[in-house]
Length: 206
Image (tube, rainbow, N blue to C red; front, top):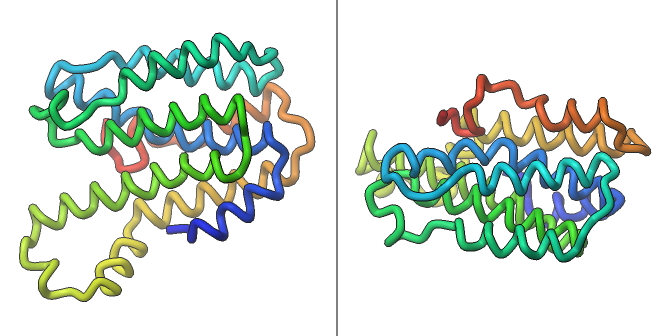
C-alpha cells in the first residue's frame, strides 16, 4: 500500500477542502463493510454512518459547516463504532470498526482538516485490506505464516487485486483533486460514485 509518509506529503499539497474530499471518497469504499455486522449479528445501524457521510458531501458541495452539528454527528458515530464484545457473532468486526472509524476521522476533518488528521482515513483503508487478506490466508493456508517471511507476506498483500485497485483509485483521486480548483457538483458526484463496484466495498464485500 501507499507509504504513509508519501501519502501525507501528497495530502499536504491539497487545500483543506480537497483533503476532506479525498477522505470522503475513501469512506465510500469502506462503508459497505459496516452493514455486514448488522446482517450477521444484528448489531448497529448503518443509516447513522450513512447520514453523517452524506452531511460531509453536502459540506463539500458548499453547505456551510455547522461545527455544533458536526460534533453531534461525531458523538453519535463514535457510539456506533463496534467493539469486539458488540459484534462477537460477526467475522467482519474489524472491517466494520475501520469503516466507522474512518467516518469519525472524516467528521473530525471537517473541523480540522490538517494532513496529520486526514491521513488516519487511508490508514483505515490499509488496515481493512491487511486484516481481510490475513483472515483469508488463515482459512486458505494456516501454514502460510510460517512458510513466508514478513517481507514476503507484505509483498504478496501488496500485489493483491484489492491493494492494486485501491492504490490506483487513491492515485486517480489525488491527481484529479490537484487538477481541479473548485469542487463543483459534477466533480463531487464523480468522486462520490466513481468507484463502481456494484455496491460492494473495496474488499468486494456487499
